[in-house]
Image (cartoon, rainbow, N blue to C red; front, side):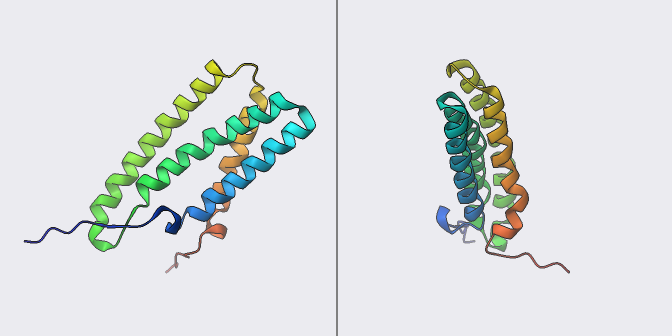
Length: 135
């Protein structure tokens, strides 16, 4: 019996790539706005908060959306679970490293840009190229 490897998509061709790009743009704009209005500390604190949101999402997208096709169903499910577990662990580690290692820090800016970057995911259906059809 022939064993086939699941189809792997390049990262830039993933359906979730526009969402990640939008998150990057939003975090950069928010960090720049904080830097302009509240100072350097708020700017890099906001940048840290946005990266805490973006980097685990990039990891999850890489792990969860790299397979396609009906034959890869089991690999897709496994990669979703592994991606979500890794995303949660990476988020916690990045928060711990930020609060332990970055001094001085503006916590409100960190959490504000983190939440703002995560909110982009709410608009993901508008940003994704492929539409899911409803029955």
